Picture 1 (cartoon, one colour):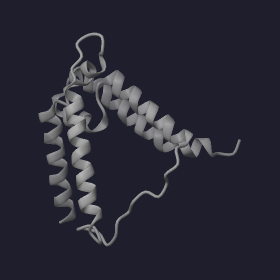
Picture 2 (cartoon, rainbow, N blue to C red; picture 1 turned 135 degrees about the vertical axis):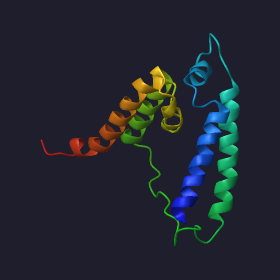
Picture 3 (cartoon, helix red, strand yellow; picture 1 turned 30 degrees about the vertical axis):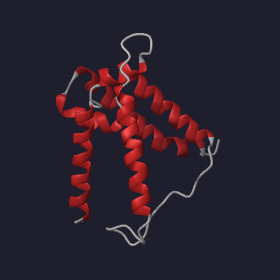
Picture 4 (cartoon, rainbow, N blue to C red; picture 1 turned 180 degrees about the vertical axis):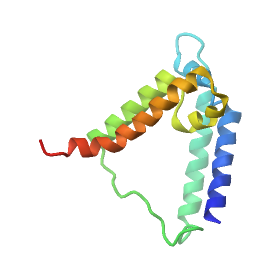
Length: 141
């Protein structure tokens, strides 16, 4: 049942990305182009997502436990460090240069556009590098 619920939540999320235009890199790039063809509609999509998440988290965390698990698994780390800032910068650069972030990239993959064909392998390499970086950085010299 947990997998079925996850599938339908992912499907709803993907449909929302397509309907909002987030799977179109031109929409994202136009949002970032303040001096040219600036399109502020993405800010409304993000604002709606923030409000929905804010309310949703309050409702869900008011429960004693999740529906499909015995307890909540919430992050305990709250400090801002170099690893967090580096990851955020790399994510932002990829988003700004490619016009995609990972969720919309997956929804655009079936279209096989030139942009997604170039972006998706870079996304996979970046995900691999992100997993490998801690072991390389902590390896003895």
